[in-house]
Length: 394
Ligand code: NZQ
Ligand code: ZN
Image (cartoon, rainbow, N blue to C red; front, side, top):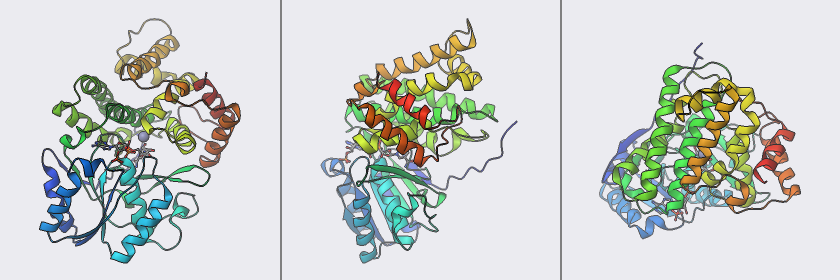
């Protein structure tokens, strides 16, 4: 049976070459004249994008201040800095020029300005935000889908706590998506981004409960297209059409489309990865591929029809032998793909060597943030989380 669902995607997407020129108009459409521009470690300065955005804002008579220096796995301290600056300036909209880390910081600032009290409460499960300033995006990487998603992921430096706050309030009001802007990405970040896109789709695919054929078909399209285009980009990073394909699959993979009609989503690999990112500051997409195979082998028997369908329908495995054998071949094929685009499939390849004690801390933290009840393919508890971390650390 098809599960009831709400599909809410309020983001106006403006896609294609030179679309950053529309940014001033898009801000004005929101009735806003004062914005805080948020950006990262400097790629948008070096590419000239930031100057171009500032120029079109000025032309549209939009006043702005800037907050640069957002790091990957973005920090809470930068969020506080942004909240102070935005309040003093009277910002009416937060404009993220960058990737997921910048967008998530913009969302957190939006929450902090629009609500009383400590913004971390929303990431620490203490309170729910009641409002958020409008968020606009000029996207520079195909990866998280944050440009259309309800999610913001922030790391509190003290304790390395990487946590998400998910509400529809923070879905961006507009997203400017020019594939050319992603051509300056390092190859590693391109591959990390493509992996994240695939993972957002898999997290909604491997679930127990109701399903919808159209959703499976869309998920298959997103996964296969991203895999094909990731290989094209590995060999030719300047391929505009491939850049465009993954820029759009990125948004579709995390705006809710590939979960419609499914009872649950899983997101265990994501939650396991977030703890790794909080402790070791790794690139999110690489952290995901490093853990996914270990997770999949741990849970597949509890979600066998889906793993079998994935193997045959998505990965093109011949349906011969037992369902378990076919499912395992599907998992191996996905891992082989990750390897082919130079992504890690274990923690050592990710560049970290956690001690047994650190693995226990990761599992314990993950258990706390998930109330010791994680996933849908198989519900995981702390001992399961530890077993998966250990398997990924072999
Ligand atoms: O900081 P700059 O100098 O801009 O460099 C960035 C950064 O070093 C660089 N980069 C981005 N666009 C570029 C570029 N370099 C050259 N040319 C460009 N066009 O890439 C590096 C990574 O940037 P980042 O924003 O961290 O990448 P991504 O978009 O993968 O975001 C990752 C963060 O988002 C979270 C992750 O956990 C992680 O913290 N996620 C957010 C989600 C959401 N809000 O919906 C969902 C995801 O599952 C994820 O958890
Ligand atoms: Zn992700």
